[in-house]
Structures are given as structure tokens and as C-alpha cells.
Amino acid sequence: MNLTRFPRVDLAHLPTPIEPMANLSAHVGGGRLYVKRDDCTGLAFGGNKVRQLEFYLGAAMAQGADTVLITGAVQSNFVRLTAAAARKLGMDCHIQLEERVAKADAAYRNSGNVLLDRLLGATLHSYPDGEDEAGADRQLRDIADGLRAAGRTPYVIPLAPGHPPLGALGYVDAAGEIVAQCADIGLDLDEIVVASGSGHTHAGLLFGLRALNADIRVTGVCVRRSAALQRPRIASRCDEIAALLDRESPVRDSDIHLTDAMLAPGYGRLNQASLDATSLAARTEALMLDPVYTAKTMAAFLQRARQAEPEQALMVLHTGGTPAVFAYERELSSKLSKAA
Image 1 (cartoon, one colour):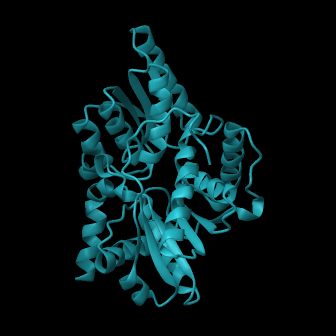
Image 2: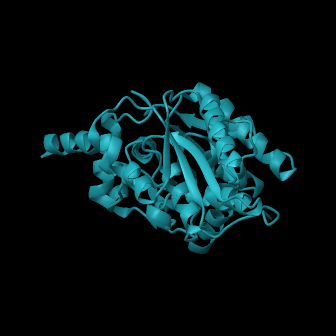
């Protein structure tokens, strides 16, 4: 799909590899398992958001912005990568950290992504409500107004739905990358499992695959809200992508598959299945997962793999987030101690 009319900057190391997981496949005993290594996109520990930022920062540069603003959770991978992308392009960055997770320990507040935000020189702000997307965006716009009054040219990356989903174009594009890679290695892929949070990665990937007439099933793993709440969000994201591209959406309601089996006890909080998945992925494939997104995604992927037929090929999209491991040291150390 031709996306050249959208301003874009070169940030990611692409294409990221698709790797077979032979050890994990043997351990699970289900289908043939693969991983798409979008934790290897290169910029400041990498992750899926680098693909999205190529379009957001492309728009920012085209508008002559000198400062980028974004809001996210305290241990947000997106805000860390936004700060990195801004610095790479010679821009300042203002980060607003939302209270989405009831954790007060020092590691969560100061290590992981927060430490990297500070190392990158981002200006940090706080927002007390982790479930108020519209309010968080509103405060971010207020900060931008203050910068504008001081003579700066800010660019805001919004959180709430209802804005052109430029970031989703990164995964519309990634769909073509995946289809081409599978053709090159002779991989007939049955299903991709991916974290489903803001919806840009999930919806962009699904939209891109269907636009290419690829019928690979895409299963989104809910990491922030229930499947019942996430479904209309993904549908709306796909419609917003279609509007942005000025075409009809190729995505039908029946294409949207979600599971919230690994969501409890909530966003940014570990459960036993995700702890087990983190340990298993590390010890079979040396894959480092993050507690918020990829651990729950891998847990759901393993559940699906155990039900697969031997000839089925399943792939998990590793969206990165590795720095958050250090912010969850207490929970992970406790798990490792019990397993010893």
C-alpha cells in the first residue's frame, strides 16, 4: 500500500526479523511457533512504537515543530521512545505520566522507562487519573498552549480516539513487511497474536493484512480493558484508518478477534500466567518480555499454541518494552525465588 503522501522520518531498523521458536514449540507441543521481533526496531531499546513514531514525527517535522508532547502511564514505552525520537531529530520532549497503576515502590517510580525518560532529558509532568484519556489530552494541550505562548512550536501526540491515527500507518506498512517475509521463507502463517491497548498496532496490522487480501487471523490480547470495550475501539480505529487513507475499510466485524483471558487483575499488574510466560520465554528462547504488554500477550499465545494442530503456524508480535522489566523487580524476583 502506498503511504508516500504521509510525511515520515527514518527511525526504525527495518525489516525486523521473523524467527522460529523451536525450543518453545517443542516445550508446548502444539503448532509451529514464530516471533516477529519488533523489540529489535533499534531506537532506545526498540519496540513497536518506533514504527508509529516515524509517521507522528514526520508530521511534526513537516509542521516545523520544535517540541513533542505525549501522555502515557508512568512506565510507558511510548513516551520513552517519543523522547528518544525527539532527541534524535533535535527536538525537545514533554512527557505527561498518568497514574494508571497503583504502585508506589521506588523501582516502579524511578527505574525502567522513567530512568530513560530522564536520561533523554525529557521534561516530566504528571496527571492523577489513569482512566481519563480525554482529560489527559486536555491537560497536554494546555501545556502545549503554554509552550506556544513562550514562542515554541509544539506538536501533540494524542491519546484518546477521535484523532487521525497516524501511528497506525506504521503497522499498515508492517503488514506488507510480514507478508513479504513469509513469502520469502515459505511460511504459510495461520495466526498472529498481538497486544491490544491503544489499538494502533492491532488495528493497523489487521487493516494492512486485509488490504493486501491476506486472510491471516489476528488475535488481539487485551492489556488495558475488557474485550467488550476493546472491540468497538478496534473497529473505530479501522474506520479512522480508512478515512485517513480515503478508502473503504477492508476489515469486517468478523475479522476482529480479542481475548481478555490474561487481563486480570488489570493494566500493568502481573498474574501467574504472565509470570510463567516471562520465565518460559526467557529460558527457552532468550526472549525478554515486559510485564505490561508482552508477558500477557505471550501467556495468551501459549494458551492458543497448546490448542493448535501440529501443522498450524502461529506468530507472536514482540512489541518490546524491555526496560519495564527493571521497574517490576520485586514481583519478578519473588517469582524467581519461589521457582528456585
